[in-house]
Length: 73
Image 1 (cartoon, one colour):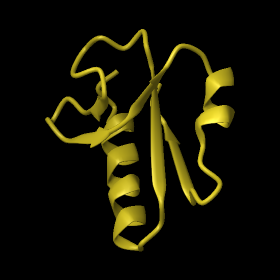
Image 2: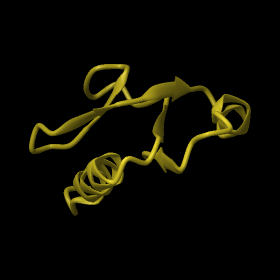
Image 3: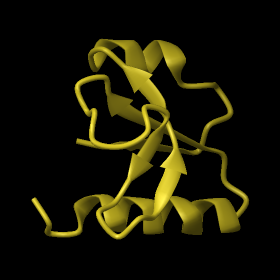
Image 4: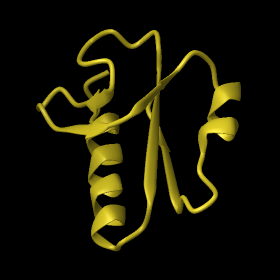
């Protein structure tokens, strides 16, 4: 905790979007710290995300034209 993992994930996702890559982000349903549909860092940065109950759901939800998949812990 507090080592900046989510902050780094968000930074990389933003860079991918700037590079015109299609990004999809997923987070576990268990994460109740912040808004349900966003990956959020302790510093207040956030990125839109899809909530999944388990990792098996992710493959079915990734679009064919997605270039970058982000998965928060």
